[in-house]
Image (tube, rainbow, N blue to C red; front, top):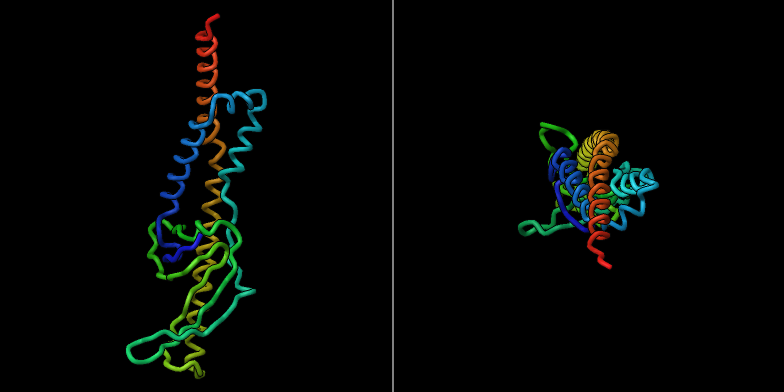
Length: 196
């Protein structure tokens, strides 16, 4: 994954979960009869396999081993300086696009994600890379606000993921049973059509 986006601001968790459930149903319906019947005597194993494929793992962003850089960007006839923070991600970075709060006013934080690394910038509003104490204090305040926002959102996101995981088995079983019935029917039909 290499994307730039508004952190936790692309779509709601409920929309994401609905889309994921639909994807699971399509994947089950696309399974071949042979594949489904192969698990007939060990149906629990098939449930476990699909659960593992679609289970949402916890996602975390580490603030401990961050990289910090000061970068200059052209601004009118000057260079304006930004502090760039690079953090490691543990889990599926796609989840960072999801808003875990229902009916919540979104905070705008533009980030760039490359595989398991997240980068964001804080504008120093300063035209020199030699930041004074006031600029440093402003950056520290903004960084702490962003950190608090990210930690709170990740906590909510992981709670929503856990709720999704708890519903997963109840959702999968009826679809799998229906697919197994269809695989049986198709198998019997093929036997009848296999004329001697």
